[in-house]
Length: 407
Ligand code: MG
Image (cartoon, rainbow, N blue to C red; front, top):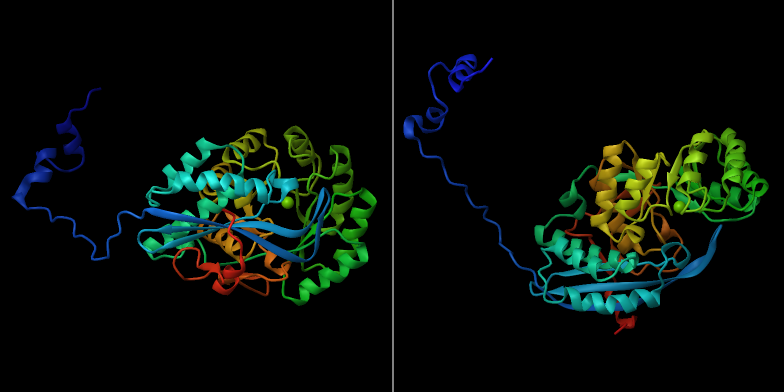
């Protein structure tokens, strides 16, 4: 049965009024949009780029199943603009995980600096795409440039970054990580974390079934049943080892296991997920949005661990969070050994999205000195976002004077 436009309006109770009448009857003039009376910045040209060696000594070596780090050999990036606004970014290479080093990051930064100079920072997607077209991988230094651009955007908008990106919350819980230690030492550190007010502890595992079970048993007995324990094997187990060990760990009420098996073995990750009761989170298997898509399609994980240093910054991290949301997979924001500058950038990402529900943003507890002013604060395991525009964190100018420029 064919319906005419007239039939439609009759059904809608509009009788003989034609659609044209709806817009011209009475000949009232629609008001024009009233321009906002805000200072207008339409072009934020990047005029110069500073890149510094940013070495951060750790309180003690950070030990995981596949590597050990004594210092965080990071890279600091500062973008200058014609508006006097500066953007701060940090790269925190963890060579065994991220596949880059301080030296490779600096070498790439030299070329990236030339790519971004003269560009309008407001065209951040164009700039980030140009960097990605120039060189694949190198995600840590890409993250530094990306977050510096977002810092500028927030400052131009005069909004803290988490509000500019979505503003889902302004505070959330983070865990505290215990690296690989003996069972006794793991228990002592667990109790210390509880005394500091943390409600969730992340413990590193992935060495051997007996030592991993002993470590987690000691931790659970020390902290009691009210504390959440999540564990991270950093690819340390084979598939059969992972299944056997996780079966034995189930009685200790484990919230989730990060990356039990090799990053390259999605089929193995899926096999572990299908065989154990503890939910599985993809970490080293997930760098890019394309990786997230593969994990989702393979049904290989329950959760996604997003890190700015793996994804290459905030823009790709948002894409991963959105893919996770569409697929019904909740996300974590984790970190490498970062100062409170990029930790704060990660916290803004977390707070901007409701699908990011777990946080592992604790490395400022492992640094001998954190030379950053502003940024997030952590009290009793709760992260509070800064309300200053942009990331709301920068390197202490006194410390900055001591840093060596990379070129
Ligand atoms: Mg991990």
